[in-house]
Amino acid sequence: MKAFEVSNFAALIGIDWADRKHDICELNCRTNSQCFSVISSQPKHINAWANDLRARYKGQLVAVACELKKGPLIYALSKFNHIVLFPINPRSVARYRETFTQSGAKDDPTDAAIQTEILKLHMDKLKVITPESEVIRKLSQLVEYRRKLVQERVDLTNRITTTLKNYYPHVLDWFKERDTIIFCDFISRWPSLAQAKRARKQSFIDFFNLHNSRYSEVNEKRIHEIKQAEALTNDEAVIAPNLLLIECLIPQLKQLMFSIERFDDEIKTLYKQHNDRFIFDSLPGAGPQIAPRLLAAMGSNRDRYNSPEEIQKYAGIAPVTERSGKKEWIHWRYSCTKFLRQTFVEWAGLSVRYSFWAKAYYRQQEAKGKPHNTIIRSLAFKWIRILFRCWKTRTAYDESSYLTALKSKGSPLLKFAVDSRL
Image (cartoon, rainbow, N blue to C red):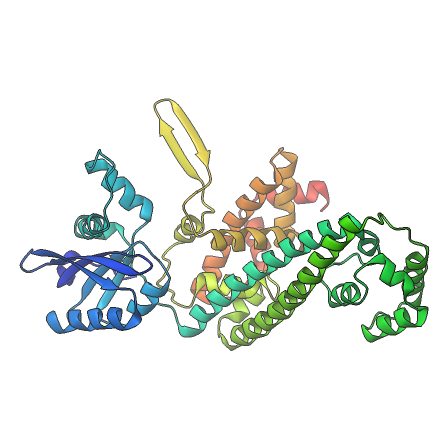
C-alpha cells in the first residue's frame, strides 16, 4: 500500500461529521493558512464542496481525515480522485483533545482542527481508505447484512418460543426446528391449541403433504399428540394477548427467512463471479456462507496487507500485551472490526470438523486445560497465516501439503495426534 507524506498534498482537511451538517477545518499546505467552514450533509452540497476543492487546488491531491471508515459521507467522497481519505479512530481524537484541553470542553470545529493536526503530524501512522473492486465492496455489505439478518432471526425465534411457552407450548414439541416455513405456516393456520384440536385429521395430512413432510409415522404422532393435548391454561387474559403477539411475530419471521434466501442467492452469484473463489472453496469448514465472508475480508487488492500480522491485528485476533512496571498481562483487542473477527472465529470453529491438524490442535490445547473460546481464537490466529500465504500466492489450500510441511519441521502437533489416535 502506498505511503503518503504531507508534501504529497495541497491541503489537509479534517471533517467532524454529523447527521445534518459537517464542520470542516482546511489547512492550505502552501500558505500554511487555516480556515473553518460548515456544509450541509445533503449530497448536492458535499459534491459541490468536493468540486470546489478540485477547482481551487487545480486537481492536486487533498488529504481528508474523518472519524469514519464507511457511511454516507465516505461513500460520497470516495468517487473523487483528488481526495485521499484517512480514517481516524474517534477515541484517538477524544484522547488527543483531552491531552490539551483539561476542562473537557468539546466543540465540532475544534475536533475538525484536531484531525487536521493529526494528519499534519502523524500521517505516517495513518492508513488511507483504498476502495476495493465493485464486486468485493458489494459482497462485503451483503455478507455483513446477511449476518445481521440471521441474528435477527435468532432473536425473533427466541421471542416466539418464549411467547408460545406462555399459552401454547405443545407446538414446540411437534416442530423441533422453529426457523422453518412449515412451523410458521402451522402456527398461522392454528395459532392456538383450541383451534388445532378442532381441525380434522385430513386437514393435518393435507397440510403436511403440502409442505413435503411425508414421514407418515412422524405426522401420525403429531396428530395423535394434538388430539390428546391438554391446555396449559384457559385464562383468556393470558391466551388473547399472547395469541395477538404471535400473529404479529410469525409473519416477521417468515419474511426474514425469505429475505435471507434472497441475500444467499445474491451472495452466491457474486461469489461465483470472482476469480479467487477457488482459494476460499479449498479452505476446510468454509462453506457457502463462510467462504464469501472470507473473500470479502481479504479482498482482491494484494497490496492491502503486507503480512499476516496486519490482518491478525486489524481483525482483532492478535492478542494485546500490556506492561506496567513488573506487571504484564495479555488481553484481546477491544478496538477492531467486530464482524471481521467474528468471521475468522466462526471459520476456525468449523474447521475443527474438517481439518485433521485443526482437530489435533484443538485436542492438544484442550488437554492443556485451555477454554474453548481461547482455543478457537488461537486457531484462527494460525489459520490467518495460512490463508494469507494462499491468498498472496493465489494458491488453493491443500491439507496434505500442510501436513507434510508440519512433518518436515518435526511439529509436536502430529506426534500428539498419533499418540491420541485422532
